[in-house]
Image 1 (tube, rainbow, N blue to C red):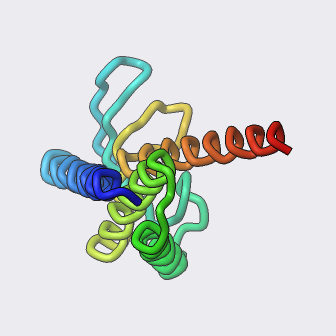
Image 2: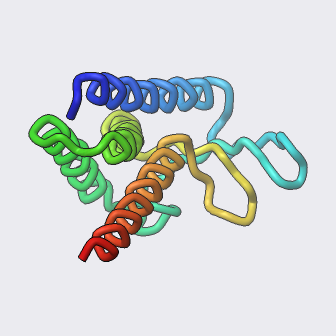
Length: 155
């Protein structure tokens, strides 16, 4: 990875991690557990919940599996980024994924579950780290699909 790309990777990673943790701290000190405040009624609420499961609150109580998975993701991304020179879009996508995974990992290690707060009422409550993981994954998938199509055209 080019030096400018690696600096951007770390900036994105640290920005996601820092902002995620900051917002979670604000939620924890400003809300009681399960407290909900409408932002755009009836569409968007801030609702403080603690998710002890994995994505969408599934598999409650499997914290150790979640912790191990997050460690593998974060360490794997760093090993990949430091050892190879991926295209910038891959590095930035992985920075989003790793930043989000690290944010949720910190919650699991410190609080025993992930602090979630974005509530659309028709979807399980989630947080900024979850958004970063999904956006990073979608960007990476889009890049891989694009590259495979381009490779197919060359062959």
